[in-house]
Length: 318
Image 1: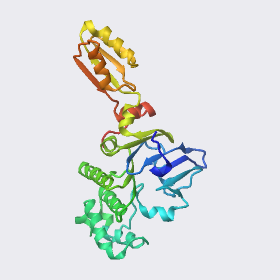
Image 2: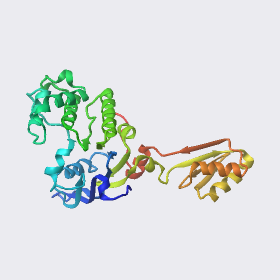
Image 3: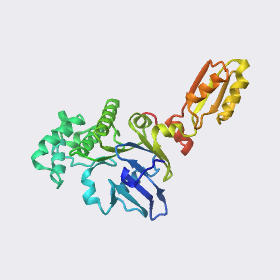
Image 4: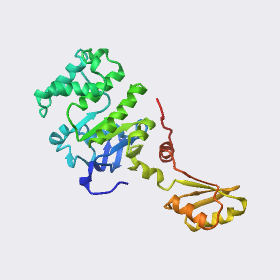
Protein backbone atom coordinates (compact mmCIF):
# COMPACT_ATOMS: atom_id res chain seq x y z
CA UNK A 1 0.00 0.00 0.00
CA UNK A 2 1.02 3.56 -0.51
CA UNK A 3 1.70 5.48 2.63
CA UNK A 4 1.94 9.03 3.86
CA UNK A 5 -0.30 11.60 5.48
CA UNK A 6 -3.82 12.37 4.22
CA UNK A 7 -2.59 15.68 2.75
CA UNK A 8 -0.33 13.77 0.33
CA UNK A 9 -3.31 12.30 -1.53
CA UNK A 10 -5.44 13.85 -4.25
CA UNK A 11 -8.01 11.08 -3.64
CA UNK A 12 -8.47 9.11 -0.46
CA UNK A 13 -11.20 6.91 0.98
CA UNK A 14 -11.66 5.16 4.31
CA UNK A 15 -13.93 2.12 4.48
CA UNK A 16 -15.95 3.37 1.50
CA UNK A 17 -18.93 1.05 1.03
CA UNK A 18 -21.99 0.96 -1.20
CA UNK A 19 -24.76 -1.54 -0.52
CA UNK A 20 -27.84 -1.40 -2.75
CA UNK A 21 -31.40 -2.04 -1.54
CA UNK A 22 -31.27 -5.48 -3.16
CA UNK A 23 -28.52 -6.37 -0.70
CA UNK A 24 -25.78 -6.38 -3.31
CA UNK A 25 -22.52 -4.92 -2.02
CA UNK A 26 -21.05 -3.06 -5.00
CA UNK A 27 -18.13 -1.55 -3.08
CA UNK A 28 -16.92 -3.21 0.10
CA UNK A 29 -14.94 -1.06 2.56
CA UNK A 30 -12.15 0.16 0.28
CA UNK A 31 -9.27 2.41 1.32
CA UNK A 32 -8.22 4.11 -1.90
CA UNK A 33 -5.04 6.23 -1.92
CA UNK A 34 -4.16 8.27 -5.02
CA UNK A 35 -0.98 10.33 -4.41
CA UNK A 36 -0.88 13.88 -5.64
CA UNK A 37 0.73 14.05 -9.08
CA UNK A 38 0.21 10.34 -9.80
CA UNK A 39 -1.38 8.69 -12.80
CA UNK A 40 -3.42 6.06 -10.97
CA UNK A 41 -4.72 3.14 -13.01
CA UNK A 42 -7.96 1.79 -11.53
CA UNK A 43 -8.27 -1.78 -12.83
CA UNK A 44 -10.96 -4.40 -12.61
CA UNK A 45 -13.39 -6.46 -14.68
CA UNK A 46 -16.90 -5.26 -15.40
CA UNK A 47 -18.98 -5.27 -12.24
CA UNK A 48 -15.98 -5.00 -9.91
CA UNK A 49 -17.14 -1.66 -8.45
CA UNK A 50 -14.89 0.82 -10.26
CA UNK A 51 -17.58 3.10 -11.66
CA UNK A 52 -19.65 2.99 -8.46
CA UNK A 53 -16.55 4.02 -6.55
CA UNK A 54 -15.91 6.93 -8.91
CA UNK A 55 -19.53 8.06 -8.65
CA UNK A 56 -19.27 8.07 -4.86
CA UNK A 57 -16.03 10.08 -5.02
CA UNK A 58 -17.78 12.74 -7.10
CA UNK A 59 -20.89 12.88 -4.92
CA UNK A 60 -23.12 11.35 -7.61
CA UNK A 61 -23.95 8.37 -5.40
CA UNK A 62 -24.12 8.42 -1.60
CA UNK A 63 -22.04 5.76 0.15
CA UNK A 64 -23.71 3.41 2.59
CA UNK A 65 -20.76 3.94 4.94
CA UNK A 66 -17.20 5.20 4.94
CA UNK A 67 -15.70 8.50 3.87
CA UNK A 68 -14.06 10.04 0.80
CA UNK A 69 -11.78 13.03 0.25
CA UNK A 70 -10.97 14.85 -3.00
CA UNK A 71 -8.06 17.30 -2.99
CA UNK A 72 -8.01 17.06 0.82
CA UNK A 73 -11.68 18.04 1.16
CA UNK A 74 -14.41 15.77 2.50
CA UNK A 75 -17.00 14.70 -0.06
CA UNK A 76 -19.82 15.24 -0.79
CA UNK A 77 -20.01 18.17 1.62
CA UNK A 78 -17.20 20.13 -0.03
CA UNK A 79 -18.33 19.34 -3.56
CA UNK A 80 -19.22 22.94 -4.39
CA UNK A 81 -15.68 24.09 -3.67
CA UNK A 82 -13.80 21.01 -4.92
CA UNK A 83 -15.53 19.89 -8.12
CA UNK A 84 -14.62 23.01 -10.15
CA UNK A 85 -11.00 21.89 -9.65
CA UNK A 86 -11.79 18.40 -11.01
CA UNK A 87 -12.20 17.38 -14.66
CA UNK A 88 -14.49 14.39 -15.13
CA UNK A 89 -15.41 11.87 -17.82
CA UNK A 90 -17.68 9.18 -16.35
CA UNK A 91 -19.75 6.52 -18.14
CA UNK A 92 -19.66 8.27 -21.49
CA UNK A 93 -20.35 11.94 -22.14
CA UNK A 94 -23.87 13.37 -22.51
CA UNK A 95 -24.44 16.32 -24.86
CA UNK A 96 -27.29 17.96 -26.75
CA UNK A 97 -27.59 15.96 -29.99
CA UNK A 98 -28.64 18.86 -32.24
CA UNK A 99 -25.89 21.25 -31.13
CA UNK A 100 -22.43 21.20 -32.68
CA UNK A 101 -19.41 20.09 -30.71
CA UNK A 102 -18.26 23.67 -30.11
CA UNK A 103 -21.78 24.83 -29.20
CA UNK A 104 -22.06 22.05 -26.62
CA UNK A 105 -18.80 23.16 -25.07
CA UNK A 106 -19.92 26.81 -25.07
CA UNK A 107 -23.06 25.80 -23.22
CA UNK A 108 -21.08 23.86 -20.63
CA UNK A 109 -18.58 26.68 -20.20
CA UNK A 110 -21.27 29.33 -19.76
CA UNK A 111 -22.88 27.26 -16.98
CA UNK A 112 -19.59 27.15 -15.05
CA UNK A 113 -19.61 29.98 -12.51
CA UNK A 114 -15.82 29.75 -12.18
CA UNK A 115 -15.16 30.16 -15.92
CA UNK A 116 -14.07 33.53 -17.31
CA UNK A 117 -16.39 34.32 -20.27
CA UNK A 118 -13.71 36.58 -21.81
CA UNK A 119 -11.46 33.54 -22.43
CA UNK A 120 -14.20 31.09 -23.37
CA UNK A 121 -13.58 31.07 -27.13
CA UNK A 122 -9.83 30.52 -26.73
CA UNK A 123 -10.25 27.79 -24.13
CA UNK A 124 -12.84 25.93 -26.17
CA UNK A 125 -10.64 26.10 -29.26
CA UNK A 126 -7.64 24.80 -27.32
CA UNK A 127 -9.65 21.94 -25.77
CA UNK A 128 -10.96 20.85 -29.17
CA UNK A 129 -7.47 20.96 -30.63
CA UNK A 130 -6.01 18.88 -27.81
CA UNK A 131 -8.45 16.05 -28.53
CA UNK A 132 -8.25 16.32 -32.32
CA UNK A 133 -11.76 17.68 -32.96
CA UNK A 134 -11.00 21.09 -34.47
CA UNK A 135 -12.12 20.01 -37.93
CA UNK A 136 -15.40 18.60 -36.55
CA UNK A 137 -16.14 21.48 -34.16
CA UNK A 138 -19.07 22.71 -36.25
CA UNK A 139 -20.54 19.27 -36.87
CA UNK A 140 -23.75 18.22 -35.12
CA UNK A 141 -23.12 16.00 -32.10
CA UNK A 142 -25.68 13.45 -33.34
CA UNK A 143 -23.44 12.91 -36.36
CA UNK A 144 -20.40 12.12 -34.20
CA UNK A 145 -19.04 8.59 -34.04
CA UNK A 146 -18.60 6.92 -30.64
CA UNK A 147 -14.92 7.84 -30.66
CA UNK A 148 -15.68 11.48 -31.51
CA UNK A 149 -18.23 11.65 -28.70
CA UNK A 150 -15.60 10.33 -26.30
CA UNK A 151 -13.14 12.97 -27.52
CA UNK A 152 -15.69 15.71 -26.95
CA UNK A 153 -16.17 14.42 -23.39
CA UNK A 154 -12.45 14.72 -22.85
CA UNK A 155 -12.51 18.25 -24.28
CA UNK A 156 -15.25 19.18 -21.79
CA UNK A 157 -13.08 17.91 -18.93
CA UNK A 158 -10.20 20.08 -20.20
CA UNK A 159 -12.03 23.41 -20.61
CA UNK A 160 -10.17 24.75 -17.59
CA UNK A 161 -6.93 23.76 -15.86
CA UNK A 162 -7.67 20.94 -13.41
CA UNK A 163 -5.81 19.71 -10.36
CA UNK A 164 -7.44 16.30 -10.66
CA UNK A 165 -8.74 14.48 -13.74
CA UNK A 166 -11.07 11.50 -13.28
CA UNK A 167 -11.49 9.42 -16.44
CA UNK A 168 -13.73 6.36 -16.67
CA UNK A 169 -12.79 4.30 -19.75
CA UNK A 170 -11.41 7.35 -21.63
CA UNK A 171 -10.46 5.39 -24.78
CA UNK A 172 -13.84 3.73 -25.22
CA UNK A 173 -14.69 3.81 -28.93
CA UNK A 174 -11.33 5.20 -30.02
CA UNK A 175 -9.21 3.65 -32.74
CA UNK A 176 -5.53 2.77 -31.99
CA UNK A 177 -4.36 6.22 -33.07
CA UNK A 178 -6.92 7.88 -30.80
CA UNK A 179 -5.88 5.65 -27.91
CA UNK A 180 -2.24 6.67 -28.39
CA UNK A 181 -3.27 10.33 -28.42
CA UNK A 182 -5.15 9.93 -25.14
CA UNK A 183 -2.12 8.26 -23.56
CA UNK A 184 0.05 11.16 -24.74
CA UNK A 185 -2.46 13.64 -23.34
CA UNK A 186 -2.49 11.90 -19.95
CA UNK A 187 1.30 12.01 -19.80
CA UNK A 188 1.28 15.67 -20.79
CA UNK A 189 -1.25 16.54 -18.09
CA UNK A 190 0.67 14.56 -15.49
CA UNK A 191 3.93 16.29 -16.41
CA UNK A 192 2.15 19.61 -15.85
CA UNK A 193 1.20 18.55 -12.31
CA UNK A 194 -2.34 17.20 -12.77
CA UNK A 195 -3.26 14.06 -10.84
CA UNK A 196 -5.06 11.56 -13.09
CA UNK A 197 -7.33 8.75 -11.91
CA UNK A 198 -8.06 6.56 -14.94
CA UNK A 199 -10.39 3.59 -14.79
CA UNK A 200 -9.88 1.09 -17.59
CA UNK A 201 -10.21 -2.51 -18.67
CA UNK A 202 -7.38 -2.21 -21.22
CA UNK A 203 -4.15 -3.58 -19.83
CA UNK A 204 -1.87 -1.94 -22.41
CA UNK A 205 -3.36 1.47 -21.64
CA UNK A 206 -2.58 1.17 -17.93
CA UNK A 207 0.89 -0.32 -18.28
CA UNK A 208 2.10 2.48 -20.54
CA UNK A 209 0.91 5.54 -18.64
CA UNK A 210 0.33 4.76 -14.97
CA UNK A 211 2.69 5.34 -12.06
CA UNK A 212 0.33 3.72 -9.53
CA UNK A 213 -2.24 0.93 -9.79
CA UNK A 214 -5.26 -0.25 -7.85
CA UNK A 215 -6.90 -3.59 -8.65
CA UNK A 216 -10.59 -4.12 -7.86
CA UNK A 217 -12.39 -7.44 -7.70
CA UNK A 218 -15.94 -8.17 -6.53
CA UNK A 219 -16.21 -4.78 -4.86
CA UNK A 220 -12.93 -4.99 -2.96
CA UNK A 221 -9.63 -3.23 -3.48
CA UNK A 222 -7.33 -6.23 -3.78
CA UNK A 223 -4.03 -4.39 -4.20
CA UNK A 224 -2.70 -0.90 -4.76
CA UNK A 225 0.61 0.90 -4.85
CA UNK A 226 3.38 2.00 -7.20
CA UNK A 227 3.32 -0.02 -10.41
CA UNK A 228 7.02 -0.98 -10.23
CA UNK A 229 6.76 -1.96 -6.57
CA UNK A 230 3.73 -4.16 -7.16
CA UNK A 231 5.61 -6.07 -9.83
CA UNK A 232 8.46 -6.69 -7.39
CA UNK A 233 6.27 -7.55 -4.41
CA UNK A 234 7.13 -11.13 -3.53
CA UNK A 235 6.70 -12.59 -7.01
CA UNK A 236 9.94 -11.69 -8.82
CA UNK A 237 11.99 -14.73 -9.78
CA UNK A 238 15.64 -15.15 -10.63
CA UNK A 239 17.15 -17.77 -12.94
CA UNK A 240 20.83 -18.70 -12.62
CA UNK A 241 22.60 -20.82 -15.23
CA UNK A 242 25.94 -22.37 -14.35
CA UNK A 243 28.04 -25.50 -15.00
CA UNK A 244 27.06 -28.99 -13.70
CA UNK A 245 29.81 -28.88 -11.09
CA UNK A 246 28.63 -25.53 -9.65
CA UNK A 247 24.90 -26.27 -9.30
CA UNK A 248 25.15 -27.37 -5.65
CA UNK A 249 27.31 -24.37 -4.72
CA UNK A 250 24.94 -21.96 -6.46
CA UNK A 251 21.94 -23.49 -4.66
CA UNK A 252 23.72 -23.12 -1.31
CA UNK A 253 24.43 -19.43 -2.04
CA UNK A 254 20.80 -18.72 -2.99
CA UNK A 255 19.54 -20.45 0.14
CA UNK A 256 22.03 -18.57 2.31
CA UNK A 257 20.79 -15.26 0.89
CA UNK A 258 17.24 -16.14 1.91
CA UNK A 259 15.79 -16.77 -1.54
CA UNK A 260 12.73 -19.02 -1.44
CA UNK A 261 11.65 -21.96 -3.59
CA UNK A 262 15.19 -22.70 -4.83
CA UNK A 263 15.00 -25.47 -7.41
CA UNK A 264 17.37 -26.81 -10.06
CA UNK A 265 16.42 -27.68 -13.63
CA UNK A 266 19.60 -29.21 -15.03
CA UNK A 267 22.24 -26.46 -14.90
CA UNK A 268 19.67 -23.70 -14.31
CA UNK A 269 18.39 -22.79 -10.86
CA UNK A 270 15.16 -20.88 -10.20
CA UNK A 271 14.16 -19.05 -7.03
CA UNK A 272 11.93 -16.30 -5.67
CA UNK A 273 14.07 -13.18 -5.31
CA UNK A 274 12.18 -11.73 -2.35
CA UNK A 275 13.89 -8.73 -0.74
CA UNK A 276 17.34 -9.57 -2.13
CA UNK A 277 18.80 -7.19 -4.71
CA UNK A 278 19.74 -8.86 -8.02
CA UNK A 279 23.21 -7.28 -7.88
CA UNK A 280 23.81 -8.72 -4.43
CA UNK A 281 22.82 -12.20 -5.60
CA UNK A 282 25.05 -12.19 -8.67
CA UNK A 283 28.01 -10.79 -6.69
CA UNK A 284 27.62 -13.50 -4.03
CA UNK A 285 27.58 -16.22 -6.66
CA UNK A 286 30.74 -14.91 -8.31
CA UNK A 287 32.43 -14.50 -4.92
CA UNK A 288 31.63 -18.16 -4.12
CA UNK A 289 33.41 -19.22 -7.32
CA UNK A 290 30.26 -20.10 -9.27
CA UNK A 291 30.78 -20.01 -13.03
CA UNK A 292 27.94 -17.64 -13.90
CA UNK A 293 26.84 -18.43 -17.48
CA UNK A 294 23.40 -16.80 -17.26
CA UNK A 295 21.52 -14.57 -14.82
CA UNK A 296 17.94 -13.44 -15.48
CA UNK A 297 15.40 -11.57 -13.35
CA UNK A 298 11.75 -12.20 -14.25
CA UNK A 299 9.13 -9.85 -12.88
CA UNK A 300 5.44 -10.76 -13.14
CA UNK A 301 3.43 -8.84 -15.70
CA UNK A 302 0.44 -6.77 -14.72
CA UNK A 303 -1.78 -9.36 -16.36
CA UNK A 304 -0.26 -12.12 -14.22
CA UNK A 305 -0.84 -10.05 -11.06
CA UNK A 306 -4.44 -9.45 -12.07
CA UNK A 307 -5.13 -13.13 -12.72
CA UNK A 308 -3.44 -14.15 -9.45
CA UNK A 309 -5.61 -11.70 -7.47
CA UNK A 310 -8.96 -12.09 -9.19
CA UNK A 311 -8.79 -15.45 -10.93
CA UNK A 312 -10.15 -13.75 -14.04
CA UNK A 313 -8.70 -12.98 -17.45
CA UNK A 314 -8.01 -9.48 -18.63
CA UNK A 315 -8.35 -7.64 -21.92
CA UNK A 316 -4.93 -6.79 -23.30
CA UNK A 317 -6.21 -5.14 -26.47
CA UNK A 318 -9.41 -4.10 -28.12
